[in-house]
Image 1 (cartoon, rainbow, N blue to C red):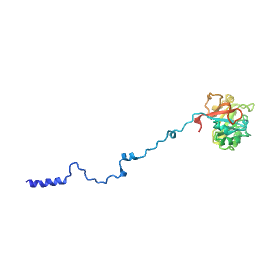
Image 2 (image 1 turned 180 degrees about the vertical axis):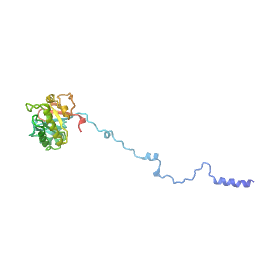
Image 3 (image 1 turned 120 degrees about the vertical axis):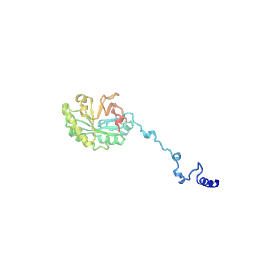
Image 4 (image 1 turned 60 degrees about the vertical axis):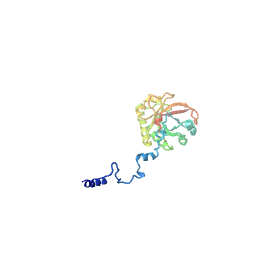
Length: 254
């Protein structure tokens, strides 16, 4: 009996793997290029982190300074003006429907060459139709190189006709002027209304344009302004005699 039983038991033992032995692998070992993620991350180069200056450019906080001049200031040394922290200049271009400031073109060229942003303004004749004045103004503006400030209109009582028209009539003419200038230049007109003019006609709200507001001193104008004329006796390097100093908010300077 024992000899008969031994044969089957021995056969089973020979065919059964030892307890805990690993089965034969069915794949080749992982190559070095297929090494685990942790191993790859250990040898990977660190990713560069952008500097804070690249992420957030320095923001301007100081007001942007500018001047406005005409031929009355004579010859202006624009390179000296620029070194005096002046960044923009409004130059008188025209008045009425026939006068052109004799220094406009030379001022525009020299100011632009010195690195200033340049714009032209028109002194509005209160007793003349607005559209012909606009045609004259835009013709002269086209002769100036690289205009980068929007065109402006100067509304004043001083030096104008002695008997200006009533408000409705004058408002129509100023609107006609603005319409022509904006169609020709594709820029919105900035309105400068001298305080006495604004007190008499109240055009600021009616025209609904960005305002260039005169208020001498360090207290900002009470109405919303795009440009603030804060000094008419400023000493600016490169300009003989007192000059008009204007400022713009940094957020409006782009």
